[in-house]
Length: 116
Image 1 (cartoon, rainbow, N blue to C red):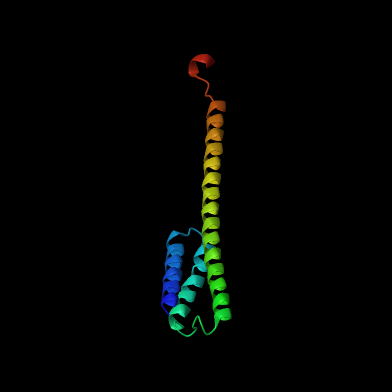
Image 2 (cartoon, rainbow, N blue to C red):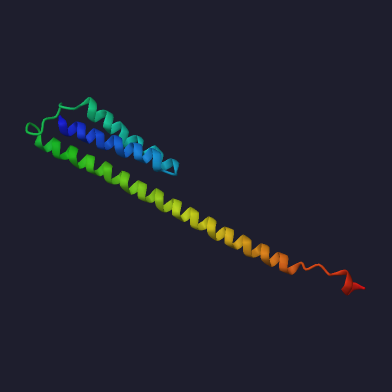
């Protein structure tokens, strides 16, 4: 039972972290998975005893680890997408700045002294 409460706390913490730190909607939607698992852990705490059902407990542990791994990978993917977006914006700003400089250099007004 204590392990179920600990697992629920871990799932709750990772889901709150994902909701707070995620930049994209896909990652925020995925944060609901560990949050619902935390609710199920609290609701079913003590129902599955370690010594009575060892095979089911191992399968449940594998599922817990899989969900946590997917959440960590989702956060890494979210951070990579944010880095790529910032990099693209920086390149775009650099390109538009260079184009603006070229446009200013190309349109040099002819002074009145040269014309006269």
